[in-house]
Image (cartoon, rainbow, N blue to C red; front, side):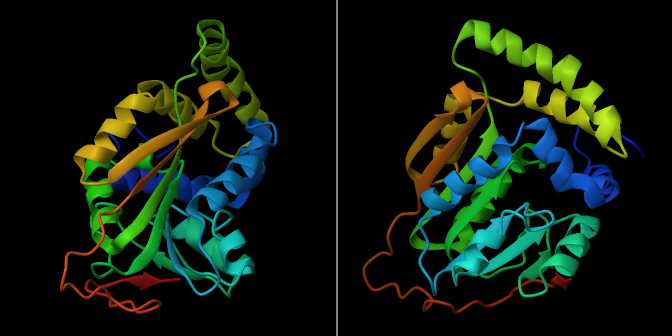
Length: 253
């Protein structure tokens, strides 16, 4: 299997990411012209977790997005459905908890995390709305959600130029630097098919999150959405900080 279809069969998408895992972070840096690192810093700032906090980093891949939390003394769980990506990450950062899991059926108890985040991965989930509901379930009352995802440039000329880059330049560059350039054709097509900023904001709100807002980066190429889970009802006792109960079988890496 060289390329996942836009139907997003989980086994096909996982196999695609397994295939590109060894060079994934290098290729991302090249294709984003170094912007991927800046986007990750902005996400960490938006999550706003403090040392001792607990963060779920979903679709974490090789754990590059999880490293800033671990380095800051934050208890982070890097969760992904690609074992190939997780194994690459675990070899590099054995101090981070890497757990294999399906975004639509997360292997964690209710109210397990202070914050949940997913960067450039929701687009690859076959049922993104169900994933948003699962993220709500595992986040503590009052906790926050941060999503970074490719979006729609706000200016017409910039949108046209970006579309040309996605469909022409990106696959050509990927052929030079990636072991599986077809995977990046899928990447380009999935970005084009993804809803814009307001569309994703509506999905988040429909899933039960509150106070949804977003920030455009690089003219709307990327949008960072943030939302909050409603505070606990009177008399409801959330889990203590750092307390996590696993309710489904997990695959640790």
